[in-house]
Image (cartoon, rainbow, N blue to C red; front, side, top):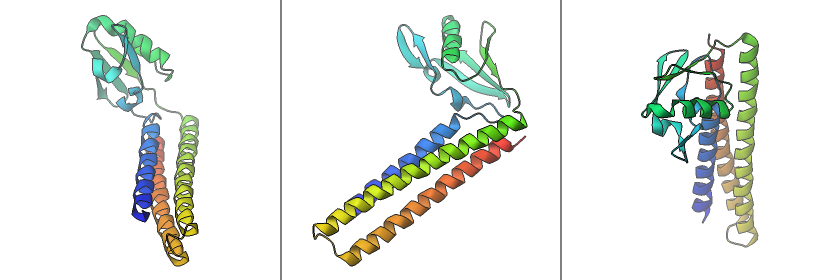
Length: 185
């Protein structure tokens, strides 16, 4: 039972890290990143379809994303979907492909993005601490029911804290890498 609590908590903390990475991938750095378009849904024959399923998304240059739909008749729909996604991107439709240019970030904007990254990282830390609290509550309940001893409770709480520290450190590392990418000129 204790191992189940530990494994489930570790899995949930891993998912929190993955959610952090997904959220940080949406933040613009000075370079074009096709992951920023992952949430874009295009109406294709009346069905909302992810952009990456109906077009190839490439990065021909460091500051440009090129979207080439498999069906050229949906260029306008793709352009509209990018506008509706509210990503502050300006798609340029040339009749064959859509290009999105990323202007270089100003120093002030870079600092704002770093603050945003720190806020997202802090939210992830809070999520991980909440998972720790849930795990400790489950272990305390086991001790209260007489399933484990007080000494075992102490050992398990220490083990859970070490796991939490490992994941918090991982959050810090991911955030630090993203901050370095944003501040890179």
